[in-house]
Length: 180
Image (cartoon, rainbow, N blue to C red):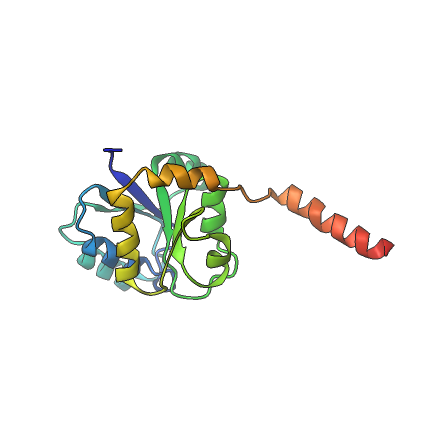
């Protein structure tokens, strides 16, 4: 209840992924019990990364954690209370959202595309208006005011099927079609 809420961004730190939306949103959040941890590398987008550092300047609640290895994902997901997927383009099947749900970590994501199809606002995560830092800040403030809501959300998360399970489901569909 009184702990800091750790929000994790996990993925590439590139303009189309909307990391700037998450950083700008954090700057708008007045609550001090929220922290944004950004995991990932900026690759060729050095200017973009430097702009993010400028925006985040003097806000100790925004932390750039750097590149991570797949082996570290379990540790990262155990350290965050929820993840944010602020992409500014239509994500088809966002891996970070699926990964978060597989770890039963609530997701804050945009209100369009595959992310919005996977995350139902108030059920297994939260949605905000794509590209709108104020909308995301509003969600973060609501969570900061009542962090216990994340426990309720976790209870509603249904893990996505493993690759093998999904393959068996497709195989059954094909067999049913062939037999009819």
